[in-house]
Length: 458
Image 1 (cartoon, rainbow, N blue to C red):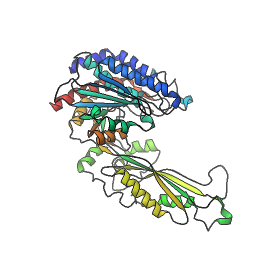
Image 2: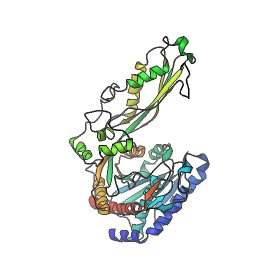
Image 3: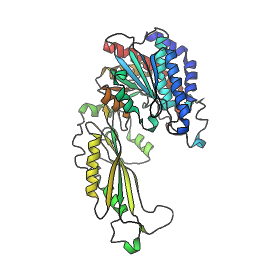
Image 4: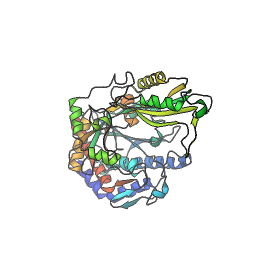
């Protein structure tokens, strides 16, 4: 079954690429309401593709936003695991269009890379799973495991309707594990598996002082103005070591195991790499943790924006009537995003001195997630990467958040394997790209993964 599927995939490289180009030509930008017809066209295209490949129960589910696309193949037999594949067909806007070297919706190949909006994030990566499934069904007539596939169309605008859809369709989506290809590996010859993600609590602080802006000469020295107050609050969020000072913030943080620290230490990401990417010389933060641990497996509290008063060209002597800040906190096991929001609000309200009125509200929250390193899914993914890339993957923790992983963990009770094939790829930027050989290697890796997962279960 494995060799037949691989042979079929290799013999159909050009057709697979041509079909991907068809999908890439659809400008499915979820941020723009006038692209709703294109969103539905992309959903319909994927549904038709699932039917053509041989999936059953293919459905397009309307929602308050773009539609969800679902298909399943459940004929592998009893006792065989079921895998839920997730991907998204929406893409980011293309602005600034003048910085693209080619039309973002007319894919081109240059220097071994496909250039198009959405090719890496996430049409090209998620399409590898459809082509892997086709390679099995067109040769052996079956898949090694049961497979369910779910595509959504608003990942790029926050997956506003995903949680509700999953909650209302837990039986339809029930599986033993999930797999997502919407991430990067460390280098062309170094695959990696993200086994844990941080959660998120995003807050906003608004301060109001005098009823209007005041003359700094006439009232300065008598008014604790909101710009000063917000600066004092922000400065009080950390101590000199970079430790977050919010009372109770670390109370539920799960201690790092020696194994986790040793696994992360093997990641070939050096201080020089960090310096090249940031343009800085010296990492800031908790000195008892390595810089890589600080950006991956430690909780954080970061100011994302701060405002208040006059900031245009020239000078204006004013005491502003209002000021504010937006703050995001990346969370780790076992922090509760809602609890952290409450702790943050209580703390900053106590910090607001003087005669200022303070409002603190939550923009969004998201749970952390973790996949056990000992799981059969991680073992199968490791074998699959090594078989195709001829190199063992390293295990990494991602400092960012992928909310759908936590949703699957919470609502379906399943672990998720993040099986990425991208590199940096200019995602969300002009000239987004995806290596052609990584598209093909992605298909081969998924083929191996499904076979190895069936073997591990047996």
